[in-house]
Image (cartoon, rainbow, N blue to C red):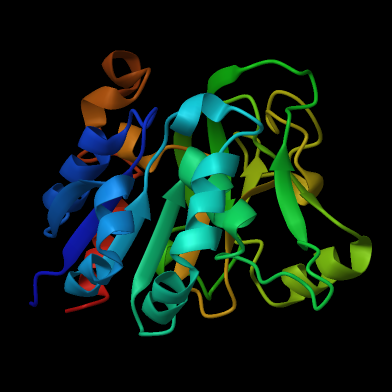
Length: 258
C-alpha cells in the first residue's frame, strides 16, 4: 500500500495537532505538522501531500468568529493552491475548528454566484461552550472518511458548532446529495430531538458535511480523541473496545490511496 503524506495544517491557537498527527500515523499514514506561515511563504509545499487536515483548537483565539481569520488567510492567499489540491483526487479533512475554517473559506461548500455562503457554523443554542460525548449516524454513502461506518460515539468540545443553512432549498439539496453526512442521534440511533443529543441546535441534526465529491469533509466531533478503547469514558464498566470509533475515519483516508 502506498503510504500517503498528510499535512496537518496548524495556526496560532491550534491545540489538537499532535493528536491528529498521531491518528494518521496510527492509521498507516506519514504526517507532518506544518504552520500556516510556512505554507503562506511557499504555497507549493502542499503539492508534496495527498491529505490535508486542519485540526481542532481555537485558531487566532477565535477572534471575530471561530475559524474566521484562518479562513480569510486561506481565501485571500491560498485559494488557488487549495482548490487545485481539492480537484486533484486528494483528501481534505477539517475537525471542529478545522470544520469552521473549511466552511468559512468556501473550500467545503461553494459560495453562490452572488458570493453568499450556503451554510455556516454559529454559536450553540444555549450560548455556552459544550463538552460532552455524542452519538452519531453516518448518513452518506458518498463521504470517503465515513466508509464502512454506521453509528459512532465521539466527543465534542465547542461553542460555535451549530450548523445552519441559508434556506430550506439549500438544505434539501444538500440532503438529497448526501452531503449532510454525519448527524446527531440518541443512544438508540433515533434522530436527536433536542439538547443534549443535539448539543448545539444544528439544523437537521448535522454534525458533519462533505463536498459533492465526498473527498472534503468537515465535522464538529473529535475523532482523534477516540482512537483507543481506553479513551472511552466508560471502558472500565462496559468492557474494553479493540479500538476507538474515531480511528476508522483516519484509516479510510489512508486506505483511499492504497
